[in-house]
Length: 182
Image (cartoon, rainbow, N blue to C red):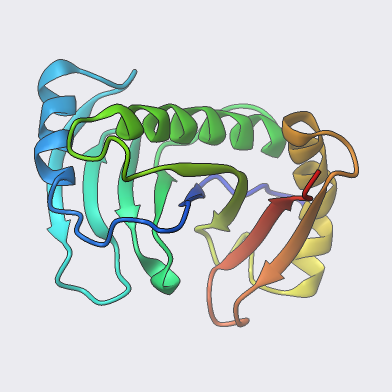
């Protein structure tokens, strides 16, 4: 690809049974802002719990947003990178994973969710939030596949995972990644 996508989203899915009442995320995310809990500038919290299968509760940051997202009716922590990063696509995916996974681990320990919210490090979705640079086509998926495979091989081990393009051509390109059961 002549230009790599910059706006990388990564959703790490919650394990079932996942909590459906996300009201506890609002005070948690406000504490994270007050305590500078993540290694970036956090600005505000937005409550979209009223939207069915929607964005849930969003922690708005300068570099990225974090949300407890219910898109596709599947709860997960969605990391939405807004600011460009240097490096290869695999480098950008690594940064997105590290940021998202750190937030997942922190959420699991918060009193509002302890024992109820657990995230699955073996299943995620990469969303390319740029329909111009990364249209949802088989050709784009195949062009991005080598760097996706490089990243997930580093994360889970070579040939231990599956990648699948999901969604319709009019949607953003989404790639579901899952580690094969041991």
